[in-house]
Image (tube, rainbow, N blue to C red; front, side, top):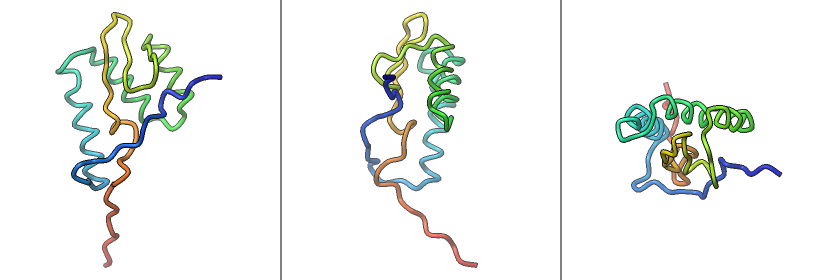
Length: 105
């Protein structure tokens, strides 16, 4: 049986954030992640896999890029042994996401 590498513990944002703030948080991370270490190409591969609906296909893409995942996607390694730490917010929304009310016209 294959393990679900995308299954992570629930997390809470402090302070709570809106859906739009959540999207910006993820975007900001991937725009700057390579600056702090690792390969820009590997970060792009990780981002693409996290954004895919089909998680089986996402896992195949990670394997094809020779990205090793010992437990779950929160920690993975490239072929040179560089460790990529993935924050939980890149994988799932916080449990306390602020639901925005739709504006009436």
